[in-house]
Length: 604
Image 1 (tube, helix red, strand yellow):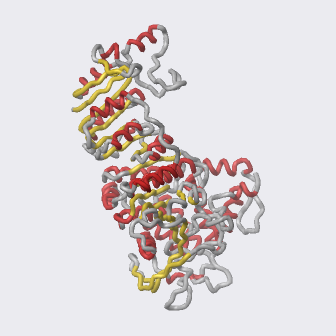
Image 2 (cartoon, helix red, strand yellow):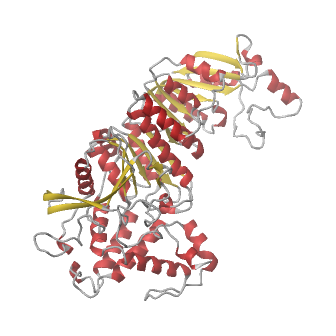
Image 3 (cartoon, rainbow, N blue to C red):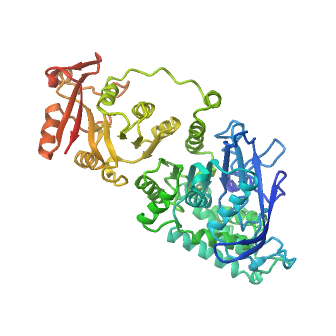
């Protein structure tokens, strides 16, 4: 393992060097904070990328995480890398050839925006501990002031991860009419108690450092570098995962690297933490760390489902949430709480739990970039299309810049039959929506609301690419995210045979929807019976390479079985359509023998 491999992290590209392209906006005070404090004046450091369109309809605001700054990406080949160079830049997922990107250092930070290490105009000295406490709301308000000074009243999108995700939530509720879409990544409604505990230990490490001097250390020979380094070490532990730490350190677990440090370096992980702590001290201020972690820890967007739904109802934008499977700083259940609240509030929302072993830092690393970057890029692209639908020239430009033209649509008799059963302008929930083909047809037909549920990560991405609202859920766990009678129709197309908990899913469908439409392969079909008679399992899945040992099917039912089940459960079959998918014909007689697919409309 090389030294570079050992010390590599999401912090690797960051430094304390001056920012070559930073701009500042100064707002004369007094600026009153929600916490009761007052700033004599406010300065906000920010950087911009790309060009603001004549309509001012392509502005994207990016919120950085706790230790970030305005330098989200390099401006040119001579510029230092930015903290999200992977995602932001010409031709990248957040394409600065198309979008006007703004990123500002947060209030309370130490990279140009007013914070504890700024000069207090009243005293001529740095604020230090005299800097007033701030809230996430104050941070959001300061960036709203910046946007207004730039003449931007409405954003195309906001993107934020971690602390930036909290800011994105607050913006959505506080300034609902000012943004079309929000992507909140690796975040939650509030810190878990475990995460809070780590921050408390980190702050204690700083204030217990002998060189803290009560927070007034700026004129001293040395500041609380040891305490700040320890705080960052703790932070790095929460940013990683058990899997990523095993992969990074286990091969040379007992071989530490020698560093010019007083910290323990006997083990490889100790060398890594000591290095990261030392590098952090070079670019960050201890008082800023205290100020920002206190604001982060105090943020609470809702401890109960009712409060979360209430806050979500205040928003007016589309939402994209993404979490990472190994993130224990903001665990996936927290993102699911936000998604559930958005669904309950009847907001347009998409969500994916991205499989990753990189922990919380996954959203800053390249490992899962094709998925989280693809989700964000597609989300932005479809916001652009929605922004000025009457502007045909702009729509064509965006389509041409995004990718290849869509392929001609395949004929799907089952989809055509389902569409014929669903009246126009109704609300439709599609369970097991796959790549979103049926949802896309419903959307194009002008339905009031179409939403998909899908369990496979890459299929969720395909749906978001099409501009659809899709939530990643396992149907076997139930559909408690959705309210009673929230949809007119709930569709389960060629998915029933893959469901483990059939009774739960069908009962949920009829709770959520006025009608349920279910399609399934009929194992009573004469061709399937013949295959059984010849000693072979019926091949109900036409996809190449799918056979009995790798199929997703766990149920093998006939039309008669389904009818008996519905009678037993008290479900009424209002309509029934029998298909021969091979010939592409509707079957009028002897459905059990002649139909390989059956579609049924159910009610109670």
